[in-house]
Image (cartoon, rainbow, N blue to C red; front, top):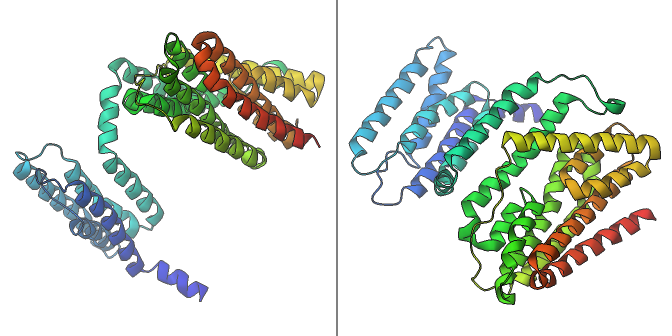
Length: 423
């Protein structure tokens, strides 16, 4: 029965069904997004399945001695799309639907060539891009030309220069592999870039709370440094949105760290899941309690600088390298206790770098999973302490009274987990 089921899945009929389902996915999105009477409906929920099926049948034809069928089919569909665009040019601008219609038969062809998984994945990505029209246009309007150039420069470094870095271990204790350091810097900067773009797009319009939540993806410390000075001279009610933003930014830290650990070290991530998730939930509860009586005040733009500037990327690489070398030195002189010192000091500098350093030591068998997890938890407490100093020093008493209780609660739960782990 198993072999018969596999044969059915590999049959031409199942491939045709897959092609039709892909077309339905694209067509449903286009039909839904073009409900406005001002937009022409070139292709919708019926046409797109036909287009993907055309590509599937045409690609099958190549296997039966007719390789010209697919090019002719693509040319015909492209001509139809161009004609539709010219006819509707006066009623709507843009050629997104027409471009998707030309792309659809290629997805059907992929299915015919035995690449159903790739075709489905690409269909999902295309549908997501089509659905995010408003958000992407907002993002394009928010990002400046200088920021685009900076991101492109960083892309050149990530794609061209990093692969050229040597793979031989260098530095004290052989702790540094230049290419690995470059890859880590690219990963950390990419995470920060995602949060940065969200802040640039949604910050002021969504309010300080959402800006803090999104900004925490880039840097919770940067959010605290940005929002705290704004609390000076404001009333208690005016400070509340800023406090919620800082608490939520600090809460996102646990999710970001857990995802980063999962990328570098699965066993360490498994150990941290209940600890990080409980801290995340506690932070969200504290943020929701503060948000409950929040007034619609204090909206504006949160300042988080572009994390892909080359200077910042180089600084991040130096910070990460220093922490990695320090972790190896501490481990060499102090044994397992060295990773705890790394977590304590590194947490004041950059929690993400502590994550990568702990995962590196754990993968090489230099520390246990328990020690690596404990060091990371200690780093989060150190980071809370740093942000608490920033809030109290730059934000004043009103902000401190609203933020520090949440920080103390998070630090208390972290200490509880570390105490339980010690027994």
